[in-house]
Length: 223
Image (cartoon, rainbow, N blue to C red):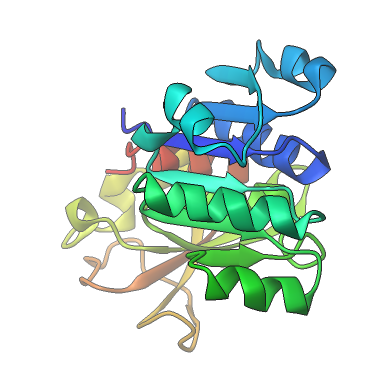
C-alpha cells in the first residue's frame, strides 16, 4: 500500500472536505485548526488532529509537518495567515504546497510567495483537490451521479500487450472501458476490441464506480 502523509492547515468547510476525502482513502493526514471543537471532531477521522497556530513555524515542526509530502493551506479567507503558513512550509522543506485563495488577487499573491498550486473553492472542490494529490494513473474524472464517473487514465505498464478480456477489468475494478485516446485531450476512439492487445502510452476512458476505481489507483493497486 502506497500511503502519503498530507498536512491540512485550516479545517473550514473546504479543509474538512479535503481531510475527509484523504482519510477515506486511508491516507495519513495531519490536520491543524484553531477551533477546539473542530479539532476534537476530526480526532477520530484523521491520523493526527492538532489545535494550534499555523503561522508558528516551531509549532508546525513540533507536530511533524516537516515529514509531509504535501500540505494544503486551506485558510483562504485570511491572506496574512495563508502567506505566513506558506512561508513556513517552504522554510521547513515541504515539496508541494497547495493553497486556497478566495479571489484572483489572493491567487497571484500566493503563487508569488511560492505556493506550488493555488485553488479556488468556486472552481475546485475539496474532493477534486484530494484526488489530484493522490492519483497515480488517473488523468481526469467527470463525476456524474451516485458515485458513477467517466474516468480518463494512463494505461498501467502491466496492462500493455494484454487485451481487455484477459485483464478482467470489469470484474476487478468495476470499470467498463468505452474508448481510448492517443494522448491527453486527444480524439476519443470508441468501440475497443476486447481481444486486441493494448498498446503503450495510451489514455483509457471508462465508466466506473469512482470510489472503487479511485481507491485502486490512489493506493497503488492498479496493476
